[in-house]
Length: 488
Image (cartoon, rainbow, N blue to C red; front, side, top):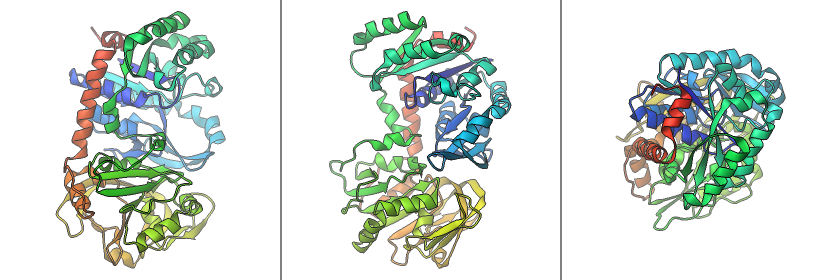
């Protein structure tokens, strides 16, 4: 069984992108490749071909392997609902919410299930590429670990450790990992690689030698800054924290408030790449821009909590002023629920039972329920010819008079979502609407902007090939193949 695990010196060192790039690289060589992440923590998720949900990064990696995503590629997914608790997804299905302390104490029981999923993938492939979570050097979390060395040792999968030079301290990060890991964990690491290097690579030759001297691990390569990674869907909200600004020549300004539990914000990646569009995520403490043409309320892992958060930022006042000025509003999933007149949670799905008054921009009401809708859907805009493919991933049932003016038509189901009487406010549960070039072009034309009309999937696919080519040049691929156990 050939397998290789990429672990990192911290979160956001680029493990997800590197794993996706290697998936495409080996797939391009004619191998049957499968991605795997034992445990993920993310509110960006995707619906799988077998009717569950997994982390967005593993769905991307499946695309890189040119295979449909399955729940076995990410058997445990944690979706944070608060600073101390998360919804727990096991093999694509919600099993409930756990506090961080409770989950930490019970996660070792999941190891056998994780190993079984890994074995199933290994049985159908030539190579399994595994992504770790956070850092194995967080030795305070080592007891009962299932995400990094706990999995690697149990599954006997060799590890390559990734250091991120862009954030600095990379020599100390790799040498420090060697220092704090126990003997068995150190022995599982078969080499290191450096990611996100900018400039002349020879300038870090001495640094690479220093890492070898301090760790004894083989140097497997220096990966340059991968510009193509910007065209891939992001999994972590940290990418939203960079500065925004109106692009030169942009005709339409779209603002997305950064809710505290924002989810599936990669819905809007296709808009980011349109030259006529300036897409900006508005951070907490900042007013929604007064000159926005469209405000999008995104998905959220905790609708009631984020509705309260939105009001605490004063964004409800900004949104009301935006609508009075004739601006447009789109709500997606949790954002759609917020646009209604009422959200009720009688069963305590998101916390203590209760409810809240909505923003009142759509004549609909939502009741949160324990049953989660997970399905791929396709259709067209109501009254339009442009088609789309997307997915639903939500708890809650929405009813009300506003549904008589649907936003979408779902194939095999009929009308979906709602539009206000003046046509300026709309909402739906469907994620991924803007991926389809035809739908995105029709939507942007309604705002006065042109569009490339390209399906975003083609953009992502081209980016994966570009990353695979860059890794081919930057890494010692024969050495990685040997470590993984691939036959020469």
